[in-house]
Amino acid sequence: MIVLYSGNVQGVGFRYTAKTVATGFEVTGVIRNLPDGRVELIAEGRHAELADFRIAILDAGLAGFISDEQVTWLPAKNEFRGFEIVR
Image (cartoon, rainbow, N blue to C red):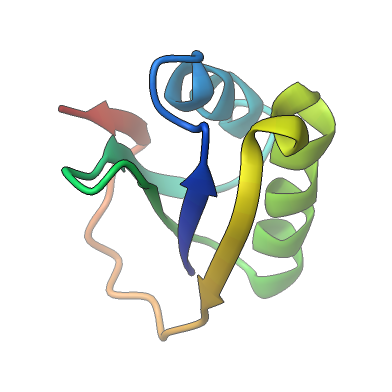
């Protein structure tokens, strides 16, 4: 799953909150700031787990910072170990 978040999503602890939320789910992946002001989340796991993870990110107080959320579902590549913030 790839999610691109737009809005006031950089400089507000978005990536750190998402990483903390990830610890409660069986997901792996990365989250990073993009040069255009968006945040990109790439996560792998079971579809239902990823869907719940995405909702939990919103419920963790981040929904108010997001003006748009573009979600793309792709087959997993099994390329991640854990969940990390990428700079």
